[in-house]
Image 1 (cartoon, chains in turn brown, red):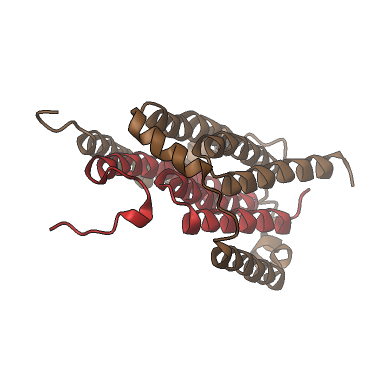
Image 2 (image 1 turned 135 degrees about the vertical axis):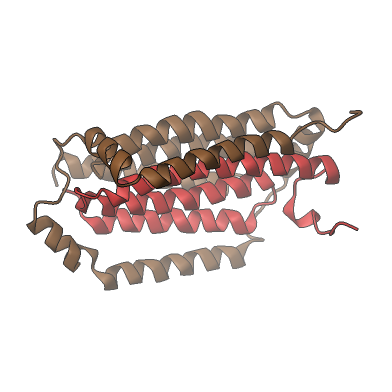
Length: 182
Length: 101
């Protein structure tokens, strides 16, 4: 039980606790702000999996892009939208949703039993990778590795995703245009 | 280091919390946050297995592509929610049940 394990458990507890708060709270504002904490906790978990570039990408794109977009989308709405949201926030949910709760808990039980049955620490390809020294160490520089791979092996998905982002830009701007006369 | 099983159990828990949010929330933006939680659970799974693949780096590269695609999805989904609000004057998923005449 060294310091790394303790820190990992604290980070996992923060992530799962804030995710449970996001799911439980009725008001939209609290959900979005607790989701900030979930995303930062997830970035910390990516660092524990020795994927530091993915952690920074998560913070920049998810927190700084998506969450700010969601915040803008409902903070800049007019008063009628906010009054609808306020009405929903004061409605007490209670245990009216117990079928969904049972479904989610049972699905979690199924997935955990599958994980324990599959024994991911003893997989053949994982053991082969460890034996071939194909594993990331804590002192490796992932940026160089990712850069070389993106430009040689994954060049086609890289270009395709840039065209997809252009399509999304044009599509979202066209979808949310003001109709003529308003 | 930290074993693989810990990451997979956290990923499964986040998936089920996101699933609960998609099923029960009565506000379309909270359903969208639930979908984002499900996507994040899958990306955590990818990154956890990607530690054992240094030469080809399948896991982390696919994780970066998945994060970018999640951003694109959220942008288009918010534009659709805006249009739905303009037409139906509500964003509760249960009340939007009419097809176009």
